[in-house]
Image (tube, rainbow, N blue to C red; front, side, top):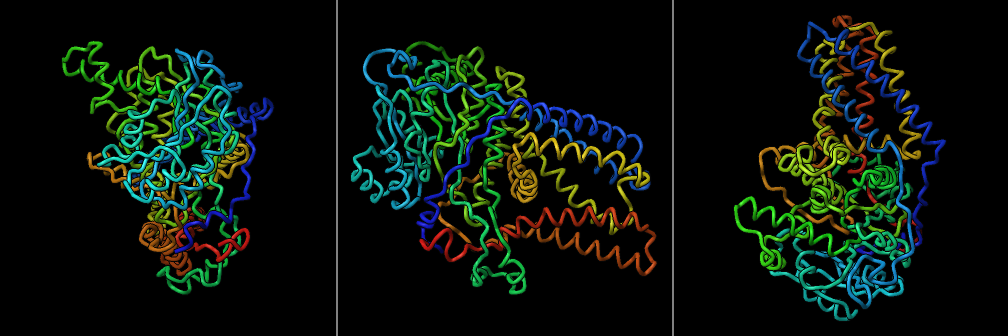
Length: 584
């Protein structure tokens, strides 16, 4: 295992600048997006009316349905990122009245640093940065360590830095329960949520608190930036040691450049998706690096509590509302593995609620990315499992009070996780076609290219322009890499089974990765064998497939292998002995 302070080698890294979507670029994006959607509809119509293979009708319908569902996902994504409308940033309020607060005196600000099993060495960096951040005039800051590990060493760390310390007897409610425990014991008018590795910059508060001059702003979410993502240097010759992988595989991959091997860079999600959702008050809280108004958090919790009393035919009185502050049922953040997005949905679903969210586009803090397949899988399992559980158990599409446009934004999120089902079909289709000799499409090759290729070209250009040039292909690889994790999460959600929550490790875990990618290796092997099988059959003359059939499906299979390879490549990756200097 590497040094737990491996991230010190990346201390000098600087975040990328946030780029606005210019009017000219937006028009180009809209043109190609509209062209892509028109061509996509044309292709889908032709696909269903002219290409179904009667000799393999079930297979043909299943593949056509998978393609159609994937296109619906494209439509939702286009809506998600259609337009950018940033909220105007103002100077931080200096008085309680300017912040929409009653009373006199300073504005109180709590900084919550949540921790479970992270080391004191890591937490020291987070605490030091929290204490070093500049606080605006008229504000008073208090830092608190929220230790769900209930450790003596961490309590001592808090004492040494003269900051607050809270520990619970149980871990009820996961991170949400940890936050609730602290919220009921502090009095800050606003509070910042930090994970153990969330290191805020000196001007974090100067740049983000101004939005609260609007008394209806409930929370402000700032981007996540992983400053420790590997920069693509060649791995060490001994990188395969301890991996349990065959030597010949190690030789193939050990000298391969591996920039962002775990596809962790969140730039596309935050700088494009979250930022564009801000226009419809649908940018959701992502936990770390978000600032919240206490009044908003508790008013939504009290609304849910009152609704529960009404649902159970119990009287709702002022006394009930006052007692609710200490009631076990009161949940400022919903008890859930994805408490951030769940609480956001609840807040935005309150009918006639004045509360709204703001997404701040500039990076104001830095965090650690998952290093190793165990860390990566743990993080992705939480994202997929929590989101699908919300979708199945509390479907926002039928949630009263949530505006239609917000439903579409959240629908895009859940649809992206559901896409694993039809992506798996499209991954398996070429192998099944080459083995069986029966294609899911019955149409001349020139007609197929005429209908599909223009859509693919327009879609690619639209995404390149609309996504600021972010590597959209990496997003596709990530979706495919997550298929086994997402399908497992979907199974658990459909059967109402408990979703296990494991905090994402904050140290490199570079072993035991093979089992995580066994599904990808199986699909790669099956597709590769199918291509060889079909080529051999064609060459020997005992297969009735045509050369065009072989080339089309062979290319499809090779493309699938290319996209599937991203997960095994990450599993085989091992960190160099030194990166960005000789600190490690």
